[in-house]
Length: 244
Image (cartoon, rainbow, N blue to C red; front, side, top):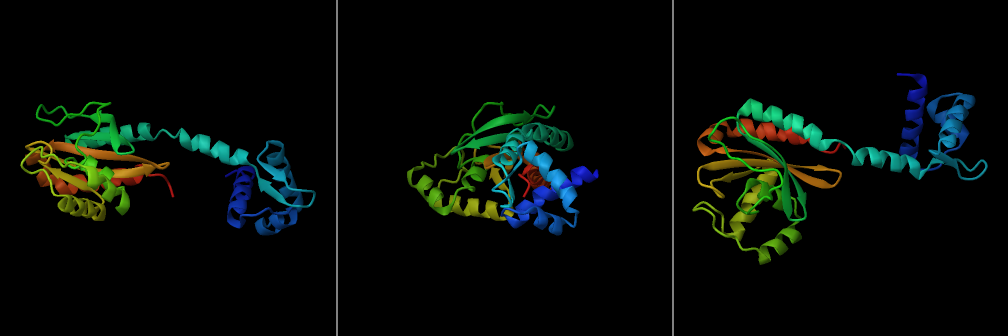
């Protein structure tokens, strides 16, 4: 790595480590660099508006421009573009529908839907909302993101309509099912929203926004490969989650 680039990164990380203004002599000592070298880097950062001097000899500290620049970069991260590549590849590998939804409150909308060529497939359209939070694996994944109080408040007013004979209509059993999903890291719907269909879902967070990835297909094809599909979803969510 270029010395100039390396030193600039070292400067930024140094302020993050110490969390306070630093004098030229402190920066020089902490980084093991000559004061003249530190002065050159500080001068350029100051000229570009990334650091400021509190008072003469009062030490230097990053300006909000560094935060604003980083936030702009992060806010425009092409997470959906990256997800598109991963989900299309997953669809090709497993031969089932793979979907991405973005949550907003207690509603989630499909942003991506990759369907297999197989005529017998479970299909969803981009722009559709997830229906039946208690009947779908994606809905359970969303409910699983709520804290205990928020989930309790939801259940107090929710009507758990029966979509199929296998729909969970007991609020206690639904809570248990969601808790199981949280422990596993993935959620499942076995013919609870549609007879003959199994879906699996995981959620991930990107910049405080919840996204949900799902695999959907005929029960007779999905069930024998349940562990494979679950592990694939967990790997996708890991790759798409916000970096620590």
